[in-house]
Length: 514
Image 1 (cartoon, helix red, strand yellow):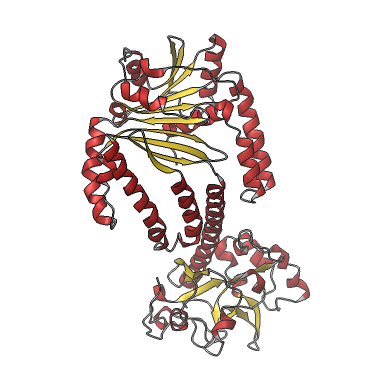
Image 2 (cartoon, rainbow, N blue to C red):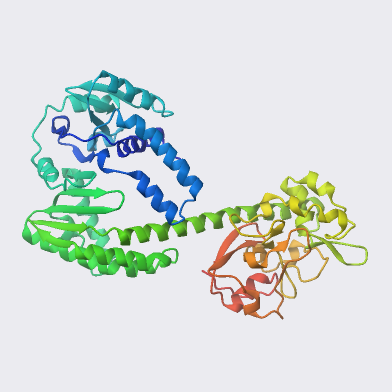
């Protein structure tokens, strides 16, 4: 969770980004000392976050309801900001960064006393920042920050900053966000000390070729659509040429290194396209390294794909949490009966399966009232029990899965060679000789194979079932609940011997899964 001070930082950025009042030129140099290493100028008039919300909605990264809510929030904040903020400057000081009450100094050109009161009121509405952030005015500027930070800014005495002036002069005035980075002596030293360590980790790269000559950096960008111009001033033309060579090699290597990460392989192509676009704008100019990117589409494609993957990962996590609760219920039931894992069905006197294990564990997922409504001596589709199908607990509903009401994808493996090989038989822990951490207790099926939650219907995964039939409908992988209560996402393809190995409780197989 974000601390109050960083919540305030992001609030300040949002405040600026949502305003639409024309900016005027302000020189913050008088309030920045020799330890200031980062200066940000934000001009609200050039930012329109409604376009970003519209894009996210169009790409179905957020739904229409979320887009509407976001639009309402933006509109509400913007109405207030429009009246009070023309432009905003943020300065970060290396000395204050090390202090316990660090907070960047925020500077807003003063218009009138009403504006100052409004800004104080806005800050008062942000929870937990009253003791951290002060608002003061001096010399036509409204300051926001810690007491020590404002005092330091007001006493900076306007010392000339030639490097800062050069970095600001290199900004592209067309962009909405402008950043100047001027490393302090200590930061330069740290960069040079880190370079050899980086060189040992990345083949064919010499980071010192990039770090040794850095004097300052200037970045101009638009948030949406994303465009940028980066200028990194080097000591001279020779240093700039070395930096260019480093960047070119780094861009060539980046997709290959990314492809080595299993979690990032799905976005390698999009990253490669972004890098190709960046290469077009990479050059040496005025003893510095220039990187321009005016075509936003590759970045938009990358953001869209990354957001999609993030959504998928979030859904997997939510489903995994459901399965963890199911696992806890199995264990709690086992502790209560002393018989081990319950069989996957409530059986009738004639040995016929009547109701699923999903009904049997109801008291252990805080659904005791629902459990008592079932007639346990009747089958799942009896006149009485059928009425309860639509009362399926949320724990059995996979998040965002398009499944018919009353159906679930959470099943246990059954059949020869699985944990539940014998119908109606409980499984003692001593029978799981492969270990509970190596044996599957339950899985999530594809939506197309969902089953009625009360029906004693599960995942027939016996040795006689062909692998392609077993895996029908699975795409990139599936969540598996292990007998120790842990949940793991199993990526496809999986070798049949490894799958059979984790399905079996007592096969003694050597399993080779990532």
